[in-house]
Length: 84
Image (cartoon, rainbow, N blue to C red):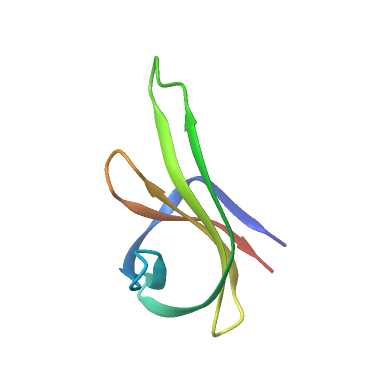
């Protein structure tokens, strides 16, 4: 079963040399990124409450497949989806 948090779960992130996720900490556990499989950006409703995010679908060395995003306005990082 896939878990989705529309507003995301806060995470701590470690960026790699390309300024992309290299590792993240969620619920007190650290996960090393194995591969980024997809990247995309969303920039909507700029005339109201702007949503401007950079998304990453990635796998970890422990076998998790997740979607992370960075809120490009605040700079904060979140885990939005966890695939089973």
